[in-house]
Every structure is written in structure tokens, then in C-alpha cells.
Picture 1 (tube, rainbow, N blue to C red):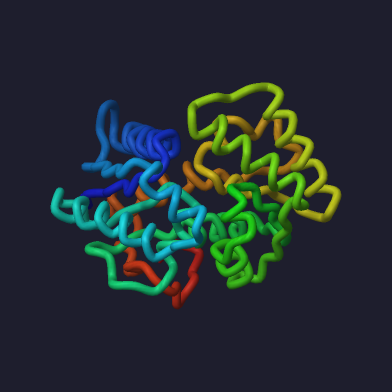
Picture 2 (cartoon, rainbow, N blue to C red):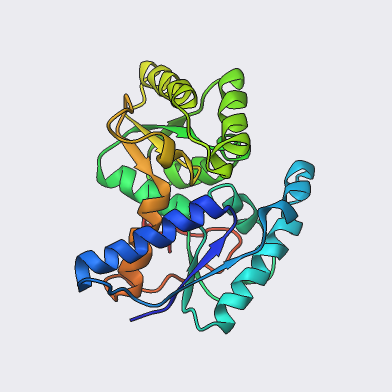
Length: 248
């Protein structure tokens, strides 16, 4: 067994990742059983000024502190269930104190396994316009599409004003469903829910397209590593030099 560390950024997403990991343990190992898991969470509010300023180095440094504390707690590897954070995690800088799974590569690997050819991207405005998913998907020959500017603004507002604060409404759900419907009309055959809280709002049964739930996919990949069903990752931040669809 390996010890998994959750490098948390938003509370809702980290909680969903933690619970999914533990539920995977119970499903595979028996009631109340799972590999060791620790969470380190530096308040997201400390990073928000840097996000607004585009200062990814400052955000990376904050996440590096969390990674170091997870290593001291005995974690063998980390996962960060925050897609936007991976923009900072993938920028150049000192290696983190322990290796981690890359959420973009985990999601892209699942898309490839399901034979998807064009994936819609729903997340924060940083993620929808950032490099993480274009890199991860294109490496596996998968095209992508993002909502238009007005749709992106609505999606981003709902994430930060509502979802990150645990607010989930039917009105906001209908906004997301309408955006997914338009992505479908543009040729997407799946939609990646690549903000950790979106799967709490948009479930498979209401989505016009098959969903790629980044949070739960990452948690299940983390369980596979911790349980010894998959190898330890080797990515320690910075440029991702290979993409095998396994987050390594």
C-alpha cells in the first residue's frame, strides 16, 4: 500500500476527491478499508490575488508548500483535484517534494479509452483558455472545443460565486446543460467537467453528452496507485514530457 496525499485548493473539490478515494477502498478492500490518505489545504483565498494577476509562480510556490507538508506526513505521491491549479503546477520551477498524478492526463486517458474524438471543456475561465487540456488531449489525438466568451463568463461566475461555496441551484444547472447542448451541436461527443465542483451540479443523467468527471477519475486513479494496481507516478511538476493517459 502507498500513502496518497491530496493537495487541496478548493474545499468542495478536495472533499469529493477524498470521499471517492475512500469509497473505492470500501468497494475493493471491504467495509471501512482504504489505503492511507492525507489532505493538506492552504486556503484558496491566499492564491486568488495571484490568479487575478496571472502570477503562476506564486501559486506554484503555495502548492509546493502543501506538497512538502504531505511528504513530511508520509505521503508517497500527491493528487491535486483542481484543474486550474495544474496551469501553475505545469509551469517551470523546482521539483515538488513528491511525485504526482496529472489530472489532465488522467482525463485524456479516459477519453481515449472511450474512443472520444472531440471533447468539450467546462471549467474556470483559466482552465477553458489554458494549456492543460489542449496539451493532454492533443497528445492522444483528441480534439477539443470550448464555449464562447459569454458562456465562459457565465460558467466562471457560477463556479466562483456558487459552486466553490457549496451552492447548487436548478437555474445554474440549466445554464450548464444549455452550454453542453451547444457543444454537442458543434461536434463534441463528450464533455470534460474539469472544475472539481461541476460534477456536483451536472450529473450524467442530466448532461446531453457523456461526462468525464475529472475529480472522481483522479480519485480512482489515485486509489489504483495506492493499492498497488498502478505504478507510482514520476511527474514532479513542470513540463509534462510524456502522456500515456495515466497521469505519469
